[in-house]
Length: 328
Ligand code: PMV
Image 1: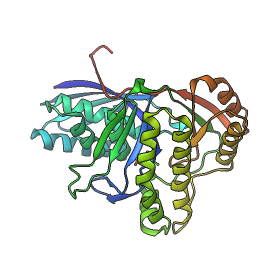
Image 2: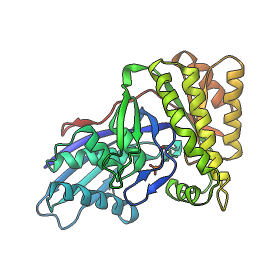
Image 3: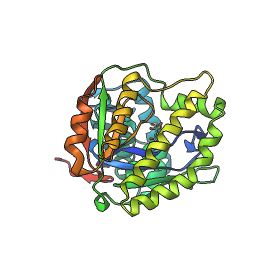
């Protein structure tokens, strides 16, 4: 009753921003992401008859409190599915630098879902695994797949049709992402709280939702055609629209810092100078920049020279869930 799984984080090009059901984590819109090879979590789960409760070690440290509760509540879902009442030892190694502003919850819950469902003897299809993962963390359901994946919001009230599907595999297109780490950090409104306030109070939320279906269709075509300008333009516009909804919320909020704006302007200046690059930003101040391999040097140099930028971490397209042997 043991398994080890590795999952990579993902960056959304069309954002998940809004829930229609908080408990089941059902979104108000489809979203689409690229899984990244640089940042991953690997998790080992062992179910044992003699345990009195679950245990959770993260990078060698025993975890209690809120983070532990999320893990054990997720394992309850797995136990329920398997109809087995048995506790687990969970050990995770997280190679997602929190400073880079990636939600480690995406790779974390994808690896936990894969390892725990396998260890307990469930034989899930990729769609079933994605649906299970969604209930740990929404954006994590896209990390089941490598390359480009779309989370289909679904229509059913029980969430049975809300999971990610693959759009194009890792080797389809060598698209690169630079994660720009900013030195000044501010206290972040969690994505959960930010979405809730936006859905409940922002008059711009309606426009956000209405604009998604045509963007999803267009970006999917752009990905299949490997049309960088098209994909970049849609991703950047979608990010700006998501962040605009927060300015309309009550009370209003933004995730941006002055250095966030500096990076955005530098990316637009790069473009004006003939180097195609586009930005996207999640629920935090850090910026992710999309570019093609032939422009890696110029893009990296430009980003590193911006005042307020601490570090730049480069990544390629990554793979979906993999299962590892005991010695890996
Ligand atoms: O899945 P969560 O709760 O970490 O929310 C993710 C929200 C965004 O990162 C802003 C967008 C996305 O689709 O990943």
